[in-house]
Length: 239
Image (cartoon, rainbow, N blue to C red):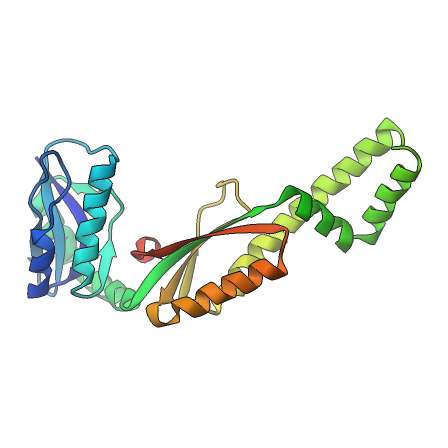
């Protein structure tokens, strides 16, 4: 039997409230508080590898939500398991100072994730508006009835290159424009297929300021479609 880990918090009697929340598994396993010194892990037993079923995803989130009423929590993503309680205790002992530092860093804060994609028609208008030479080439081809196949290919290559440059610029701009309303940011690894995918650590008392900054950036950049998810537990700021 393995030990499933929900998250790590400061050791406190208030964590016992989270232990009354049903855990993952079928039937749900009791949640336990496994403490070491000044920190503790919320855990339960599991007999097999869990699949991300809705019931278990909700149970994982509910445990973290209940634990969060007692103070800051470092949430582990769904599916985090350790061989046994002894392995969890060893990790707590080895990284106690690190976890305390991270708990201090995320205290009173939530994560907001911002994903950005290009609106194809709007970004085309944007790159043509920003490049008079490229716009003139397009207008000249239109006046010539479309131009030769070679001309079309050349214009297409230039537009693709301009859109890629715009992607790089917008990726930087998304992070720069919003980080002023956040305490920290964590870009997702490249390869997501999006213009940008960035998580921000935001003070709860400034959540409205952050969302206002997102709305203002969206209005100023119609070539982008922004998707905001949050508030979330600070999954991206545990390490």
